[in-house]
Image (tube, rainbow, N blue to C red):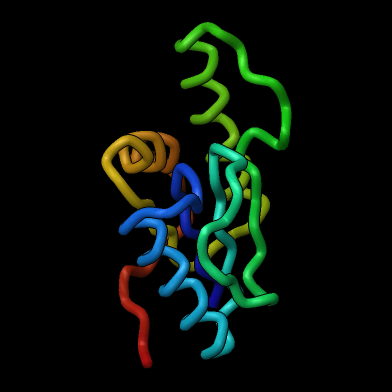
Length: 117
Protein backbone atom coordinates (compact mmCIF):
# COMPACT_ATOMS: atom_id res chain seq x y z
CA UNK A 1 0.00 0.00 0.00
CA UNK A 2 1.24 3.48 -0.83
CA UNK A 3 0.57 6.46 1.44
CA UNK A 4 0.88 10.03 0.13
CA UNK A 5 0.88 12.83 2.71
CA UNK A 6 0.48 16.51 1.76
CA UNK A 7 1.60 19.27 4.13
CA UNK A 8 2.83 22.82 3.63
CA UNK A 9 6.27 22.24 5.17
CA UNK A 10 8.10 20.03 7.64
CA UNK A 11 9.34 22.90 9.79
CA UNK A 12 8.67 22.68 13.53
CA UNK A 13 4.98 22.45 14.45
CA UNK A 14 2.30 20.11 15.74
CA UNK A 15 0.80 19.03 12.40
CA UNK A 16 4.29 18.59 11.00
CA UNK A 17 5.27 16.34 13.91
CA UNK A 18 2.09 14.26 13.45
CA UNK A 19 2.78 13.96 9.69
CA UNK A 20 6.34 12.75 10.27
CA UNK A 21 5.26 10.38 13.06
CA UNK A 22 2.64 8.78 10.79
CA UNK A 23 5.07 8.60 7.87
CA UNK A 24 7.82 7.00 9.96
CA UNK A 25 5.54 4.44 11.58
CA UNK A 26 3.92 3.44 8.30
CA UNK A 27 7.35 3.13 6.65
CA UNK A 28 8.52 0.88 9.52
CA UNK A 29 5.47 -1.32 8.87
CA UNK A 30 6.50 -1.73 5.24
CA UNK A 31 4.27 0.82 3.52
CA UNK A 32 5.55 2.94 0.64
CA UNK A 33 5.34 6.49 2.06
CA UNK A 34 5.77 9.89 0.35
CA UNK A 35 5.46 13.34 1.90
CA UNK A 36 4.72 16.21 -0.50
CA UNK A 37 5.46 19.75 0.70
CA UNK A 38 4.87 23.14 -0.88
CA UNK A 39 7.59 25.04 0.99
CA UNK A 40 11.19 23.82 1.09
CA UNK A 41 12.17 24.66 4.65
CA UNK A 42 14.59 22.63 6.75
CA UNK A 43 12.99 19.46 8.12
CA UNK A 44 12.58 19.76 11.89
CA UNK A 45 12.09 16.05 12.62
CA UNK A 46 13.99 12.88 11.84
CA UNK A 47 12.50 11.02 8.87
CA UNK A 48 13.01 7.34 8.02
CA UNK A 49 15.29 6.84 5.00
CA UNK A 50 12.55 4.97 3.12
CA UNK A 51 10.14 7.97 3.29
CA UNK A 52 10.39 9.96 0.07
CA UNK A 53 10.02 13.75 0.06
CA UNK A 54 8.41 15.48 -2.90
CA UNK A 55 8.56 19.22 -3.62
CA UNK A 56 5.13 20.07 -5.02
CA UNK A 57 6.53 23.04 -6.96
CA UNK A 58 9.65 21.07 -8.05
CA UNK A 59 11.97 23.88 -6.97
CA UNK A 60 10.57 26.28 -9.57
CA UNK A 61 10.26 29.97 -8.61
CA UNK A 62 6.69 30.98 -7.85
CA UNK A 63 4.78 33.74 -9.56
CA UNK A 64 3.72 36.74 -7.50
CA UNK A 65 0.19 36.23 -8.81
CA UNK A 66 -1.87 34.35 -6.19
CA UNK A 67 -4.18 32.89 -8.83
CA UNK A 68 -1.22 31.43 -10.76
CA UNK A 69 0.21 30.00 -7.53
CA UNK A 70 -3.14 28.39 -6.66
CA UNK A 71 -3.52 26.98 -10.18
CA UNK A 72 0.04 25.57 -10.11
CA UNK A 73 -0.59 23.99 -6.73
CA UNK A 74 -3.85 22.44 -7.90
CA UNK A 75 -2.29 21.13 -11.13
CA UNK A 76 0.83 19.79 -9.39
CA UNK A 77 -1.19 17.94 -6.74
CA UNK A 78 -3.18 16.23 -9.50
CA UNK A 79 0.02 15.33 -11.35
CA UNK A 80 1.73 13.96 -8.23
CA UNK A 81 -1.26 11.78 -7.37
CA UNK A 82 -1.39 10.46 -10.95
CA UNK A 83 2.33 9.63 -10.97
CA UNK A 84 2.50 8.21 -7.44
CA UNK A 85 -0.83 6.31 -7.62
CA UNK A 86 -1.33 6.25 -3.84
CA UNK A 87 -3.74 3.94 -2.05
CA UNK A 88 -4.34 6.62 0.57
CA UNK A 89 -3.98 10.41 0.42
CA UNK A 90 -3.82 12.42 3.64
CA UNK A 91 -3.54 16.20 3.88
CA UNK A 92 -2.76 18.31 6.91
CA UNK A 93 -4.16 21.72 7.88
CA UNK A 94 -7.09 23.52 6.33
CA UNK A 95 -5.15 25.44 3.67
CA UNK A 96 -3.68 22.28 2.18
CA UNK A 97 -6.93 20.33 2.67
CA UNK A 98 -8.79 22.73 0.36
CA UNK A 99 -6.31 22.24 -2.46
CA UNK A 100 -6.02 18.47 -2.12
CA UNK A 101 -9.79 17.91 -1.92
CA UNK A 102 -10.36 20.17 -4.93
CA UNK A 103 -7.50 18.64 -6.93
CA UNK A 104 -8.71 15.09 -6.34
CA UNK A 105 -12.38 15.82 -6.99
CA UNK A 106 -13.68 13.71 -9.86
CA UNK A 107 -10.74 11.30 -9.96
CA UNK A 108 -11.85 7.82 -10.93
CA UNK A 109 -9.43 5.87 -8.70
CA UNK A 110 -10.75 4.24 -5.59
CA UNK A 111 -9.19 5.39 -2.34
CA UNK A 112 -9.50 3.78 1.06
CA UNK A 113 -9.47 5.61 4.36
CA UNK A 114 -8.67 2.53 6.44
CA UNK A 115 -5.20 1.39 7.43
CA UNK A 116 -4.87 -2.01 9.03
CA UNK A 117 -2.22 -2.75 11.62
